Length: 161
Image (tube, rainbow, N blue to C red; front, side, top):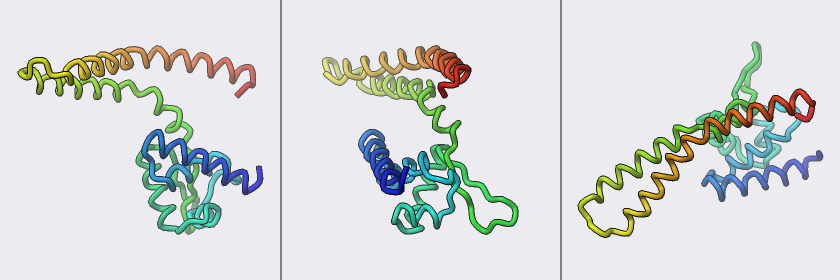
């Protein structure tokens, strides 16, 4: 993959994460670039040069991705700068966190409690359905995660991953 293709891919990831999750554009762009850059570990300066961005923009994006556990920052003995790379465990685990849905359900139930004396408020049915969906997802996610692990293990055994 040449540099133009790497940057195009980084922009596709930027677009997805900006629209879908509200990430700042540079955060999504950095994430996308880290998926395809060679070598896989890059310094802040290398990332800034590759993405044609300021070092401070890269530092802010790295900090955001660290907060989500999407990247690792390491420094080898004798090195003067950190190396930034993807955290595979951070990327995989995000889709299977049932506690997100448990927290959402609790918040929706709290909203229902706040509206309990409002009679026929149409937001009550909206909150009831949102709470039910969040509870359903929180119950289903652990089983789905186990199914994914089985499939992933089979793919690895067959060298498809």
